[in-house]
Length: 359
Ligand code: SAH
Image (cartoon, rainbow, N blue to C red):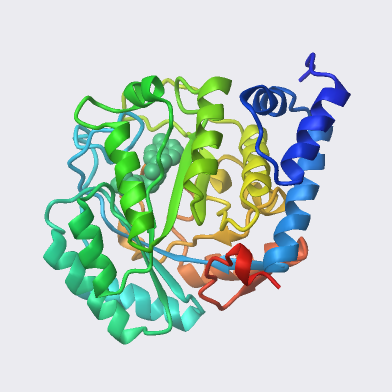
């Protein structure tokens, strides 16, 4: 990509960001629009250095349990949206969920992520029961929920039952863009309210976006970066948008690998202590996507612990990887490939290190 942003202009903004200073919109624009391969490499190196200094050469693993693909929402991008009549729906039982945790624990997982559609069957009482059981059986593990928008009171109940972390990507911080991605029942204001509630309740909170989602522009990305700076989430999930054949976005273009990697680096530089996954979506668009994500500044991977017979049903997008492999097999491959690039997959809860705890 040839672009008109001069080397000097780019370097000034890069230095500002690297020294932890606040960037104005023009400076963010310079960084976002000034991307070329050398500059991306420069950012990746700086981001990696920063991550290594804070977290070491460690990769934290999270065992992902996709426990339901029923959803009452109808997000235009998502393969498990309620209008997708071709989705074959499933729910795991409490026992199945606990068995996933048990198998994961044996493999070395110390964080379990319960993710699902917004499934009314899993009301507060059921979630509290499940979280309580996991908390009791695995006192040394972190429990992460990723089950969408709820009332503050519900988040509070889950916290009390033993949940530590919550992932709720904001998807986009730009109102008009949010409207292009979601039906009218959903609002950006409510999603942001949820994130603020989660933070104030003491959850380690994850926000995030899909890169290249339809309607995303430099301006909307600037809104995202400014939003992240303000929210100061402990985690940020960033992966490419990938079209799903049974959604209104079936014909839309997939998000780009290079742009996703670049955003990972930018977010690492913006929020040095952030826990940043190299996502499954990134691994889906490129066979070395997750390794490249780590080299760009990521330090988390989330292998799938869901039972094999349901994995192919939790399809948020097309061609999702590892739908047919056992968790143990994926983990061995991950250990090897991370080892090759100089990183070690560790048995650790991998909690957020706040600035005051840094050594
Ligand atoms: N229902 C929960 C969990 C959603 S699935 C919630 O609303 O938070 C987790 C993430 O997958 C979403 O936040 C979204 O960013 C991502 N996702 C959904 N469809 C996708 C697609 N087609 N391509 C890439 N990522 C997608």
